[in-house]
Image (cartoon, rainbow, N blue to C red; front, top):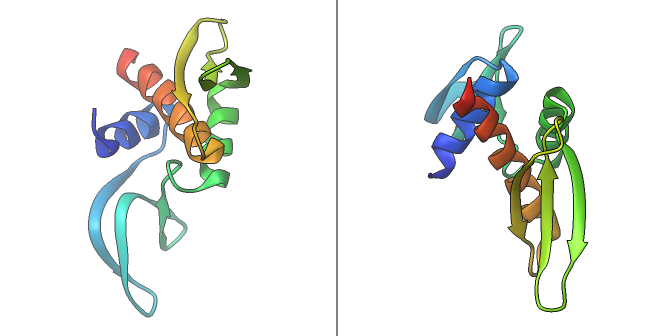
Amino acid sequence: MDDRELLELAAKAAGISGGWGDKIEYHNGAVDLRDVWILEGDDLVPWNPLTDDGDALRLAVRLGITVAFWEYPQNSVAAYVSGDGIPASSERHGEDKDAATRRAIIRAAAAIGRAM
């Protein structure tokens, strides 16, 4: 599943309506927007929990995704568990725990969106 599909399914799970765009004009020029965008008031706002910690945390809270970490001798895993206690997704984090955390949240949310 590519990033776009992950984002669209996660948005669906969270009840976020919006669209997808490469560039959208708003305010004072072009905004490079390879993200889902949502309408807040009269403004288009990028929404990308794959790259934005705040978007990822708000998504996890909205969907009741619990964040946990386990350390293994060779690999570290950032794991996310859905509200019913069933493991939803995990990511090896290597050098970037933040990116792995965001991706695992998105993958869990996408699984919820796919099941809807």
